[in-house]
Amino acid sequence: MRMWFKKGGAAKYISHLDLTHCMGRALKLSGLPIWYTQGFNPRIYMAYAMPLSLGVSGERECVDIRLTEEDFPLADVAGRVNPRLPDSISVWGVTEPENKLDAIAFADYELRLEAGDSAGLKSQIEGLLAQGPVIVTKHGKKEDKELDIAPYFSGMALNAGPGYLEAALRLPCSVSGSINPSLLLDALKSCLGLAPYAEIYRKRLLLEDFSEIA
Image (cartoon, rainbow, N blue to C red; front, side):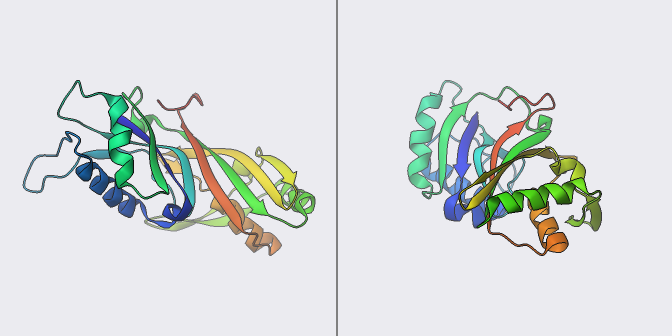
């Protein structure tokens, strides 16, 4: 089955490994007929979609688990698990998987930047992305590399509000490679000397045809 959950608040600052431990503990205490892996070190089977970066909130995250009872009612799962989770992590739905997790290709994000002059910040960002290559350092597990982020961020929608600037964007997010929305913040700092406080939300995970994973 596929559990859909939200992760935000204080929980956005815990690592993916800590999330795994937290979810595993909740499942163990839930009393659900959980399936464990075989071997010398049995553990709860859990397969996550693309892990969230530290500091990013997720609104439609998912993890696949297995039950030993095929006819167990999925409607009962969230009520068993949520009381064992912290307030900033909650299961909001449970379904049978329709798509494989490795079919994820993109993600929709929302950035909310604090700005006294939101219209001015909007113009600065648009000008930066329009002027040509915007080179930042993309940190990887094996090595760092220089990346031009302009092609990835030029199509985002910017909305200036009172005291904030909101950006909606779609970025690659897959097992073969992802673009972190925080790269825009790196560019603002390195190119414009700006470091606005920002909240980042991952709204949904998408397949190659831009439909939501189910």
